[in-house]
Image (cartoon, rainbow, N blue to C red; front, side):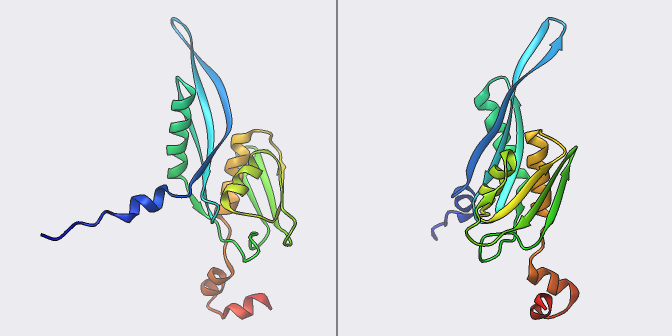
Length: 173
């Protein structure tokens, strides 16, 4: 009988993922008997090598809400094309609800210049040098979603060259 190998697929998914809670908020629902309290958790997961996701979970206790948020974030993971200097390839804007996020690549040594939820998402995506600005909204959820929207719309130089059918050297010129 041949030995079965354990799938490395599960190991790959579980390793190096970090999760950070952006916000925990107590929410209530008015029902016939009074108010029913629950918790909403906004969670960001990322592996610091170009994958990041944002999720929301609601439950009767904080731990359950965070667990549901992590599960939701894993469903919405996007790939981020990074350059050799750990920055984004080009300027990009992201939108979610009333929130807009503007991001620009930065020179090596600049660091992550961003605030609030945007900073958390960028750090977990593995971006080391970037300039970002939140515009229009102070909502952590909408700002995090706008950041993920922008990162999801980024394209690498090789992808643009392939799409246009030209050599990658022509993109830089």
